[in-house]
Image (cartoon, rainbow, N blue to C red):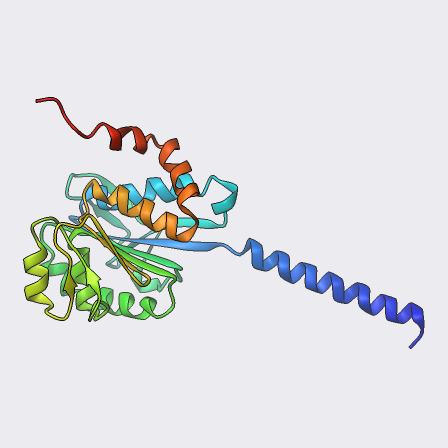
Length: 228
């Protein structure tokens, strides 16, 4: 092979390597938030806002947030009357890198949703992170993902979680619990704290604090002592 040909081969190999690296860096990752009728509003709006704001930052711009209906209909209504048209449904088996599970006051029909449990179990094998807010921990328990792990649920519901799933190391009076790649929280407004904890794990504490400052969460957190 002549010198000219060798140089040409190296040139094309370099282009292939550069293109491959560029494609890998720009690959979009998906944060999927499950939604269903009766879902508690802040359980889903908190992570949507936190991760949506983070996705505007260059260091998190390769992430997108989608909502996934737990039924064959994309239209759902939250416990507080807000209608949401989900991006997709579990029937379409969307690929996600992070899966978030919210709660409802009545979890019985949700826990009986076999397709949802199968969706959770399947994705738990491949996702980077899986998280729940409030009684969403019961979905993780139903899917068999919390055996021997530390977890929490809504404040005051720890005993119910322990009774339903004795194999779980239930943590009492804890806002957010991290065990491996699973995060559980009390839900409601604590869903914001849980979202920031997850964001810090996916990036860094400093970057999570940037988003907290942008959303003025830090100011609110400092002013939680209300006047009598």
